[in-house]
Length: 535
Picture 1: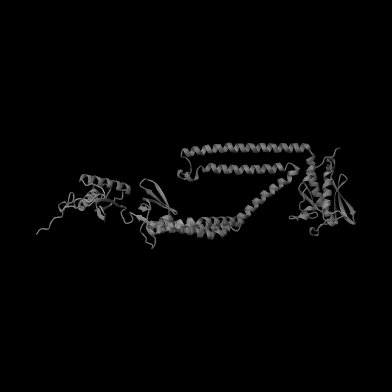
Picture 2: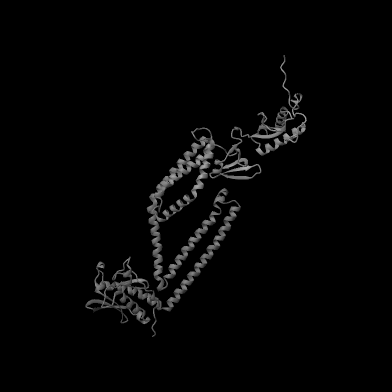
């Protein structure tokens, strides 16, 4: 009969075993002296016979195992007492061929075993592996095992296909319920959650698929002798993971309870702060330094400080707080804050300065550098201005604080805005007439608060003309660009109606007569001369 070489025994690796009893954490030298069959440790040899070291004895044993035929493996192992090199020993035979020699010097005192006891344990391990060797030579067994593994793979593929079809059905079902607004989740939550049911089902299907693949691999490995140890390793690994997770969860319960208690107290404190600040915003309570317009920023600032304090207090009680992963995350966030905090903190502090100095509020009309418009938002990092062109101008808070801010509506209690405009008229036009014309234009302009009298000022006596300024108060419902446009239209109409030319004259030549207004024209229409007192 031809000799069948057991190539699978080339997988022999050195695993932990001291004498007849395996050890858990062997050194490299101990691993080199260990005889293994199908990844299973059998015995570790320690005795040296002449020039033959334990490592060479392991190699000889492996060569002897490779040389066995199928007929040899069918025969049971026998143990024969022998005397070698003056020491008692036990020789293991398979079909009359030597396999392994175990001597008294191979025993370890810590195992507390006699030579016969150690030999019986080694014999039991080798007999267990001989069964695997027989299965390896049995072609019928191997074909049946391969068929079982293939059938299991087909069933696994069918499971995956069925799970995918079921996921598609579930997705269509919930999409239809969402479109028909029959979902159990409120519609306004969908903006943040989306189709959460389908996602949860997909996660469940993926987890079940991973579990099914894991079970199939473990079962398929157990069908073949040379992969059976992998099946056992997978089972031990899964049990170890479950045991480790269970112990970790139980051990972390006290810390988690403390964390929950800290967060509960934090939530109660923030709710109390919110109640107090709401009373301040409503004007029922007065707290020095906090005004109704600064309540929103104060609430956010206090909430951030309280939550940061709560996180600092709860951090040591979080599971894995002392692990390298948590430390790495802390270093990462610390590095990010260090690199990016300079500019961010500058703008954030500038935003707080704007809010608490009350230099401007949302809805105020302001002039900032070349921009004029209504404040639409005062954010943490930037201020947004809505211009008359309906553009949004975003200005960093640091720029706002460092620049010049002209607030046109800061002193208005009712929300109205003071509007000013200038005209320049020559000296040949009576100033009283110009005053009357500007006041008339103000009275004719819609959107102006007529309960507040317009104010006309002479800003300057220039070389060729006088500069006049008209100031009016707009109604709270009138926007600054609309009010300015209507006022300019009225001024043009009024000056045209009374024949007064709006033009800034320049010096071309010396006039023949002095450019003055005669006294009889001082009160030209629509100006009204004051009544003389009766004598």
